Length: 163
Image 1 (cartoon, rainbow, N blue to C red):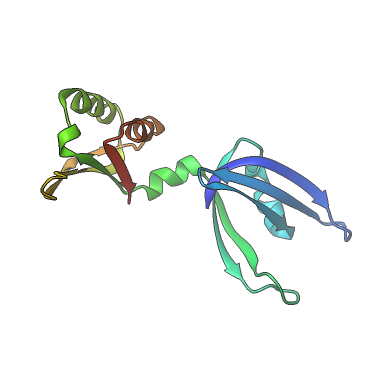
Image 2 (cartoon, helix red, strand yellow):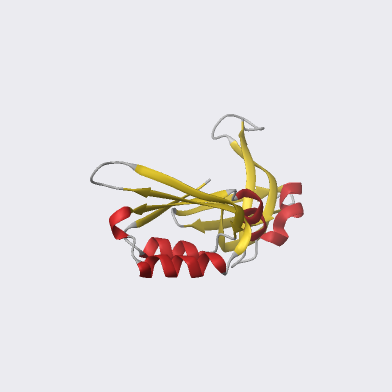
């Protein structure tokens, strides 16, 4: 899971050990995580308000008693670092009839100014016939930036999929 830290508080338990409660928000919503013991001591530096983090965790049976399972945090990384490692490719889906010179020029400008490590694919569909073609260029890779994603989301004839 990943997102922006919007709230972070540290507390001391009745037994005198430190723990924290962190609220993380992404585009789909927000959630609060309680982090205890050594895990809090190890990762609390990541959980300052405004930081963007990626949490690797697993769900495990509760250690003490019955009830809700525990979320065990295995690793915390900066979201920007994870994006560079995890985003292998982006496929931009386009309606054939919506492609014009302006769209091509704007997308070309965004792509040429964001060289990186992710494969770029275009999936162009003719909605009348249902036929499509997928285009990719093996010798050119891009950095999937917020500017590119915002452009695609603002253009009604485009969608994308990150692989």
